[in-house]
Length: 135
Image (cartoon, one colour):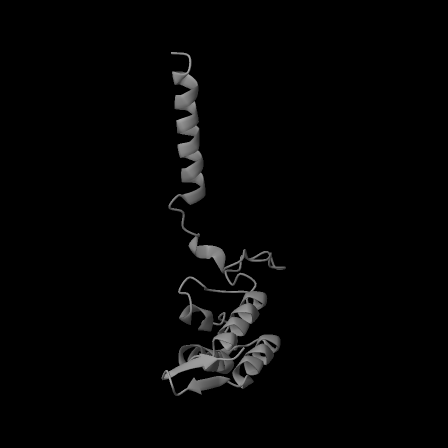
């Protein structure tokens, strides 16, 4: 009888620990959007620190990768452009072209231009009929 209680507690504790470590958790959809900085005039802003384009709206090209990536700040857009440049796929290139045409921040545009100018290094193996990428 005395060994039953500690054993039951050990089983329950192990189960809770396993659920905490491997549970069905999902990231919050706002992982790309950052809280908006305080506006000097005191008005609230919903851009999340994003650079606005000529029409006064935050760039929307990050939503082509992740629909919840609305109003990303420049640092997140730079990281996204660099990652898309490393992919060197038709999909990523089309997103980078859209970003190049609509990005208002000159620093982010420089990174996008750099990502688009990377040469695609592909070597073909005729014996197996497959392509591999040199990094």
